[in-house]
Image (cartoon, rainbow, N blue to C red):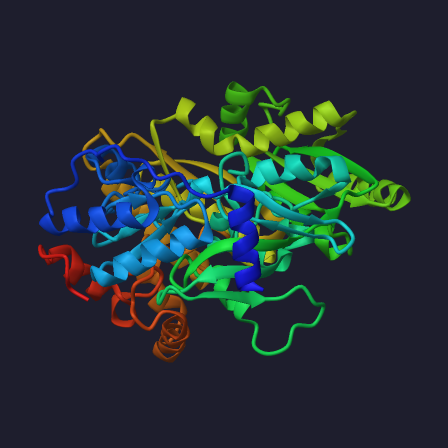
Length: 508
């Protein structure tokens, strides 16, 4: 299947163009010159950059992690290009780090130790659409929203919809097992990926998973999804297509007290109702969103819930009535149902603009995505407010309330001396508090670099060693995105450090 799919990919994309122009000056590392020459020979000059600007841009993602250090950056256009780049990197003793749109919020796409960075954004095609079986093969650089738009004429969609949907890529979603507002009813990325074509660290091409209802053997597809680039590089993804529901109702519930809103979330689920989405925003976030997107949120509400119910028309009507009754019984100020598709889109635009809206409040922000038991949301929110007040910071809360996936946004100005230290300290306390509440480190953003050192607080030494063994079964050479997820005693971070300090660039 892998070789057939790779051939199909090459046919769709056509033969790669090989440019003859000179690349701009590579980094000061003398080994980079030979590495760049070999990469150009392998995939063409139009697919390789080693100038300062390209390397700088490839050294960061959307997190506040600033210590990434990229080597040459390649832009493969096919599976064979990825294979060629990995072979060259291996000969030069360099690691490889894949990169999508760079929207990650945990430092997972920030390369360590000057690896060859493979930017997958040019592999952005819909390769195959099989409506009869509800499957589409897509390249990893395809933007999530572009896939949704491509599927719209056929009455189906790809269910995972992260807030960065307009920019994030399917490959990045696979790397982090991303979720989004609708994961409450539909599940996260892993539930919608049937198979993945992967290039491993030895440059072999394999297909993990298959399109049958009950694949035989170990679920290697499941192990790969969420592995943050440490197990290989996805070059094609078979995604499950979900039929569009016959009816949808989107409701905006307003509350005068954050605790009432949080209690309503638990009460909705306890009543046996599983909406497609339950999102929560506190007042500061509501005001920021309104200033930014004019979504129609009530500025005077202490908190709002955005609840969406979908399915058969009759069932949606009944569920919506129950949700409204529960909200009123929990002292809701107002219960409003979107009148048409335009208003639905406007309400969702507000929710998905929340991170961007912070720019109108403060120039910088930092957030985690810990998960806590839904029944403890009230207690958790009170603790977050207490922590932030103690560190003299500002927080805007917006999160997937239905599954307890928090997104406390710590808004701040990094130009003010000492602020970043307070932000990091508050962030650590929020993580520790979430774990103490019986929660988990990440719901969808991944571990990356930022939460790597907290892994030992959530997992035992035995757990971590078994995770490392699993990673090593995919990449025994420690070449794939080293230094991520696993704390140093169980990771390749020491190897990344050696590569970074080795001026010859030939350490292997």
